[in-house]
Length: 336
Image (cartoon, rainbow, N blue to C red; front, side, top):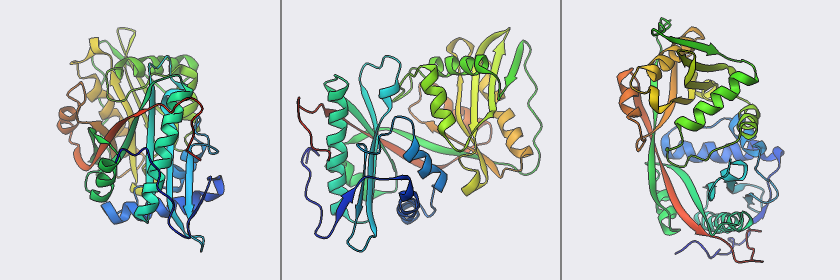
């Protein structure tokens, strides 16, 4: 199956668009499926609220809720065009996701989501869109559906964790190295943005963003905290950045490193280790049980080795499945 045909909904099922008031039901659906697969919810209400309010996500076009006649939520699917706010992206790059209680609902949602991805490519004037979906490695049902709809494994991420048992000493700065801490002013954040964009340019699925869109996306997250920003300077020049947040505080009591990056010319000097150790010390001082981060195991840098060397361990594997979706024909539609 190519994923281009959308089968009908099962008898008694109906669909509509999501509203902010649906966050509780979506949370229960996502948490229930995650728990069935990996043994824990791995999502919070804040995550769902942020998803529905994310800048660039159009609730009237980009998401589908499927209910049974009795009102029970049977499925939730969405497509988010990450390249819509990018800085001169050469193509459409779309994240998608589908959660379901009924496999026939899942198939309908996949059809609708992929049709929307095709529209996004056409709207942007591209001949195709790169669609990516993350799935737990142990979720055999979801993996089988992705293969059925033409997706193939693209890369793999590991969730890494280090536990904190009491306070940690703050890492000493290296000779010639200084640190600027958030929240900071616009100048500091622009510096952080520039280092992030340059240090991640070769990473899988990276989509460049102008500062304004980048900054808005961070500020839109209910768990973001500019106070967890670090920018490292080497002889006065920006060299590395770390951005942390509270995404995993509610459910796991852990801090989270959302971004850590070092410019190419400064790699191999221990700067990433320094940033991480400072983040660990901050989380430990705040009473966090540990610190988490995600690493692409196909990373262009030996990041996994670094995280293992500082005492982190892999606790969850998430594969990103990929499909190139042809743009919808001119005047075509089908995503509802």
